[in-house]
Image (tube, rainbow, N blue to C red; front, side):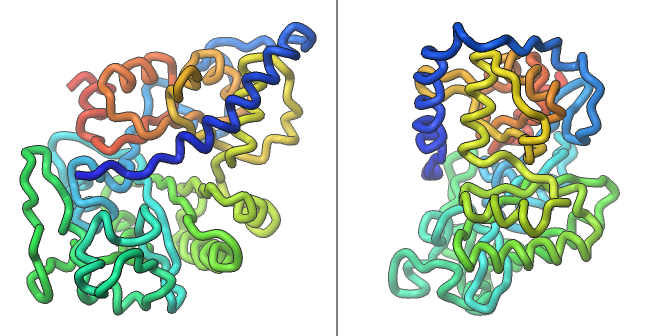
Length: 330
């Protein structure tokens, strides 16, 4: 299975700038003392007391065809592990339907190029019906044993749960389960399309009664601003600039104005080049400011163990089975 494109370098460049600045100011700033991660009274529902929550990145895209109803069902119905949070991404179609997709197009995960006769077909260029009719989202899925069990399925042979899926259909399935799940959902589109996607997203999660079970996120600065201006009752993750500012404060000890922190969750990588964002100091400081800390995309066994030991609040991973086994010792 081909590796997804990483957002880490973008965040890394911003954080490096903060790191350089920190060396200049670190000796002049008053220190903001912190206690152990569990030493604060918090109201944030995503700050955990005992162990990290298991979040299935791309609905468990390392062990199932990503962002498909098949993957959600497989995670929910597994006898080997439990998933606490589902992480997935949304794009808006030509007819304003929110569908699940991690990339900008379907080329990596499906037979899109063959079906549409060209590369780089984006969701906004097609209707939901057009996308659902002929795309097999299991086409390029490589199973752990190296096989491609769903490759070559076409037309009526494509199972419904391997076709393009709407946000509503995923939520209806998960809400119907005995367990109450939580969600990390990213708006991928920016500009006017992203704002329309946000409006539709907010409408759906509100109507489903899961507003407080959802962490909304985006890498688009204008959409982060739109979140705050129009939907300030949503729980949201920090934007890139906010992550850099908080990281800078964690390594310099600079005090932050709690009223300036508009996000509820830091969703960050563990290590990027010379940077280590997985420190107890950063986690402790976040908890002091009532902010949960969730790490992506953590697939290494030792990193999962280390972050859990340091009181990280969630491990966002492509392999929720592995993370569950490590965290719960089963």
